[in-house]
Amino acid sequence: MKRSLPTRRYASAQLVQIAIIAFISLGSVGIVGVGFVFRQAFNSNNQTNIIQDASRYQEIRHKLWLNQNQVRHFPHHIPPNSSDVRLAYSRGFLQGQKNNFFQLRLKLPAQQVKELNNQYKAIAKHKYIGGNTNEHANLPNGVPTTFFYTSNSQEDSFPNSYEILVLGANDRSGSNFKWNHGDSYGVAIDLSASEIIYWAEEW
Image 1 (cartoon, rainbow, N blue to C red):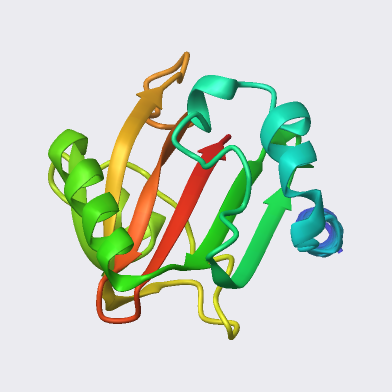
Image 2 (cartoon, rainbow, N blue to C red):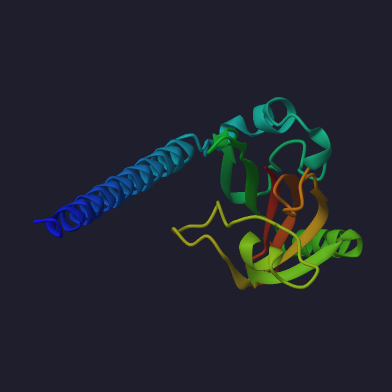
């Protein structure tokens, strides 16, 4: 019996440890679960706040987008000779962080697109063929760009027929984590389709 007391104490200690581990594990699952729900909620909320009504272009271009330096390369109005106009605009917060984008996609006469391509290519600070912002930012000396918000499908990457020309990119991070906050803007041009996409991002 004298030996049974330490055994019981040891067994009790083990039970306490098991209970604590189980409690922590359940707590972790709860935290992960809550995080997932919030992340999904933010993503869903962000998706529902995307404006795609092209008739609101001038309102967005001149009033809703606050930093006009980021959109000064956008046309003042949608050109009357354009077709297949698509717009995507969202201004909001994702997980407590600013997450804004603006994109205008146009089909224009081939010669006009060629001239715009020459104009923007001459002043572009970075150039990428196809892809999306995550791919571009992870290249050597790469910078964040944009996703293909005005795509005809759910595809978020530009096909290789597009050249993404970055006219400006500013890292506004206050920490060692590069590009945690910032902005970038430019155009994406598909000469074969006579299309130009004006874009601006702020996060």
